[in-house]
Length: 126
Image 1 (tube, helix red, strand yellow):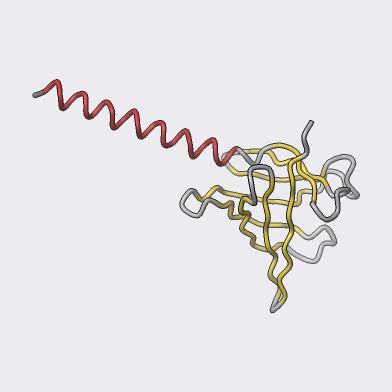
Image 2 (cartoon, helix red, strand yellow):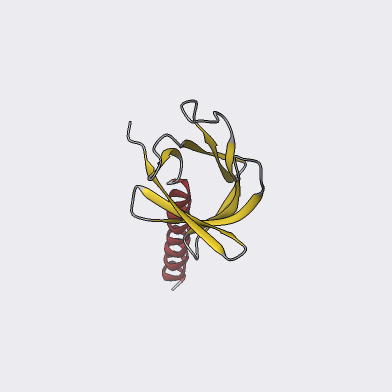
């Protein structure tokens, strides 16, 4: 009987750690280089720092090194990243939610008053 209980506990622990690894892999899927689907000159590099995700413009972008995406956190239940986007023109910092739009694309919306604008970024293959 003890042997069965120990086996069940071990399997639960194993499944729990596998589940956590899957969520970590999902969150890290955003890492890498991306370009704006409508304007390919706008390219960013997504990176992780301190458990949060950030996106800065690449050297080939109009404003190299500019921190566009800030303080993104993975939300496993909604399968999205919650954080902020900084307007390159300096007119503000806005809350956003980034969602997946296929395996190699993500999208987000910016809401200002009654206006909403959507953006789609696709992975740059190297």
